[in-house]
Image (tube, rainbow, N blue to C red; front, side):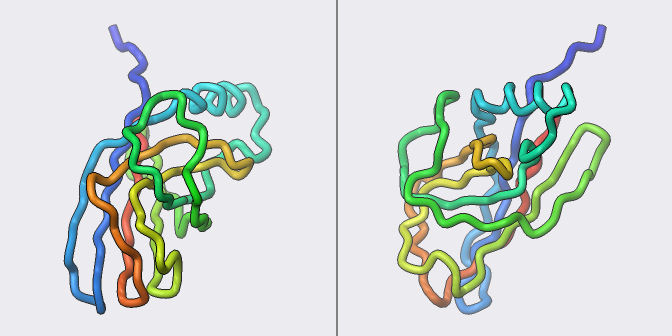
Length: 144
């Protein structure tokens, strides 16, 4: 029999310095415990501010755990676009331009609802030192 799978996430992005590709990342991420309440509210019709709309980067390199609720010292940005690549997927496109988050040692990434509730988190093993010549763009796909 078919059973519902817990949601999973995949974070994929490219880092460019001066427009030249210097790093490609494709990693699974943690869907945090708060996601359960978000899903329940959406299914029950309480939809105001429950949708994922925001991408954040931060400075905390601690390993993700289910109880994570925030990104540390975040730079926040509205996701660039939302699409549905398959019946069981939602994809969030995001980017950081050369003029955004400069001076930050980026160690973590997060997806958040419009109400600021953390949905998913991923941590880098080595800080990405954001500078004026560095940009990144990618997708964060949640599958059910």
